[in-house]
Image (cartoon, rainbow, N blue to C red):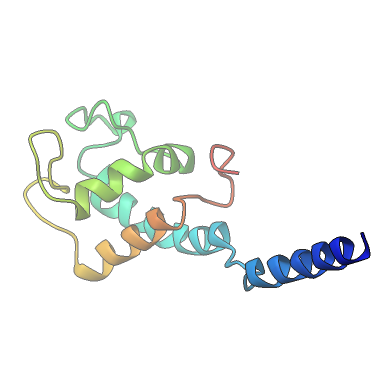
Length: 124
């Protein structure tokens, strides 16, 4: 019986030591740090041309990007429209152009980190 208890104890410590990982990266924090840059990109490249009906533009409907919640809600679609391959259902944005490689990289990294903002109740 003592051998079983000893073996079980050793096995437990071995398993615990093998599965212990390094401290996880705070992914939401990464996303939140990138959000101000993403918001600036969206504001200057998306809402001034299409995606803000309150400004009188209706060509970007049904995707509205007027506030932080809208941007976070559409994180995957924003990333897809600037970085993923074009398909019949995924069009390159902004229409008639493209973002800089640096802006695309910011959006891709933000989306990969969760696409959140500091006020993002959807992803908390």
